[in-house]
Image (cartoon, rainbow, N blue to C red):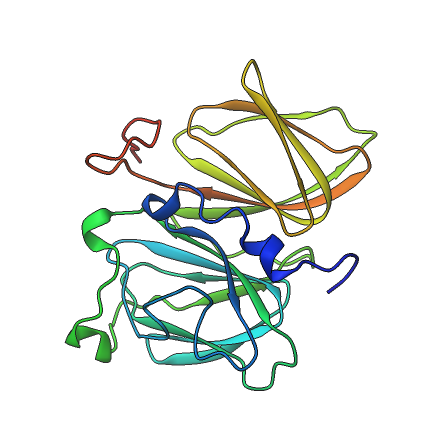
Length: 237
């Protein structure tokens, strides 16, 4: 990886944002392992009903299959998997390094979390396909109604960037550099290369850096679970 190395323990240290209720965060597939580290489901074809998914390949490469279409996603590429399409994920057999993957699934419907029934073995005629773009390479990033991604280039000469997570949750994934996120009267968080900061819906915040930072911003449509306090109201289109 460029700049400082990100260890597996560092990458996984913060777990999932919102834990299981959000369905997102860092994953690792180590060379020689049969599946993603700590993922009991394993490489099983599945569907997220009415929920789309982002894969960001932070390190290494992986082979994905989406609705019968296979391709390799490589380091610094963002893949968008539209809702309702059966898909699967494996380590690229030609990869020489562990695969570090950041995942976001939205919305996070509790009752439609994973579907692995017999319908996953057929292709779905929706006209939708997996879309992939390289981040910070002048390419249009793939997006849909539930997930949108933006590239942020920050430097210390800029005034802090003021933002509000309106009707969405925001996840800031630091690609390079150091990111500070401050929330008035609440807290300040700092993340370095490989780290991420999650801002809940409706929270105004400021982004800054003491030097420079390249950040992938992912806006995610989430919904509250029954019995799980996600700190926000219902999300509407």
